[in-house]
Length: 277
Image 1 (cartoon, rainbow, N blue to C red):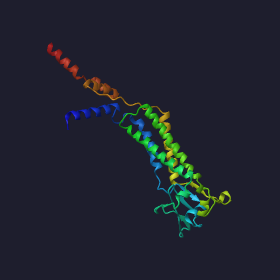
Image 2: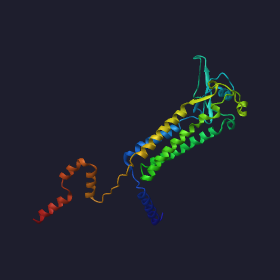
Image 3: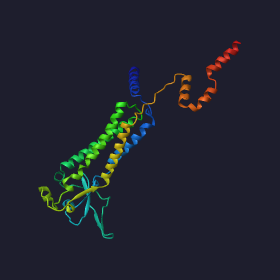
Image 4: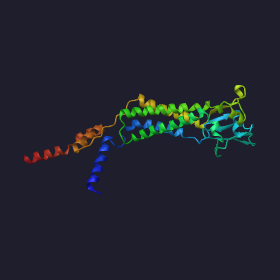
């Protein structure tokens, strides 16, 4: 490689590193708590297997399974899981080791609220992941004050989008009174009491979504309402005296010890005075 090109590349890298103040932990330990909150919230939003978002009971179970004896089932935004009957305990249980079953006619089951919930959940994961990446980059580059505030707004936006994704519980499948797929497709509803209608309740994935909302909300409020963690000045010592002054400023306990010891300049000056005498 040409030495001039190599020097030019090094100079560009040094300019880039100086612009972003590239170093380890420029904001100190104050940035660690928001990083932990946002990262934990993002992981919580991804903690699901695709068919454990809600617990479905009522006539809608017969629509998906074709059986009137199954009391409940677990549904997600893309698949569902059917429980099995265990005669030994005389109860219905879900085998979580079994695979999720995809919906046979998703275009009919998924209404506007269903599609909106999918997109809102996906948007919250993207926004939360972006905020998490920016916060992790703050461990090696300096985040300016406007960037820091933007990260707080992004965390609140991720929490709001995840909260809006709970529109899934207002889908038609969670409130239908029909028991056949043909009636559900035609939009025919049977007039029944509210106790006999279908209902969806919180389950594992939706509870993890609530945890992610709380974590992102806490991170956003901590960033916006807290004080901006100003980066620690990057000091470069050009000689021994400046290095000693930095050490005394950083570690005041050893200041007295260093003051008790004469430095090299004082020793040289005393030796020269003795030689001249």
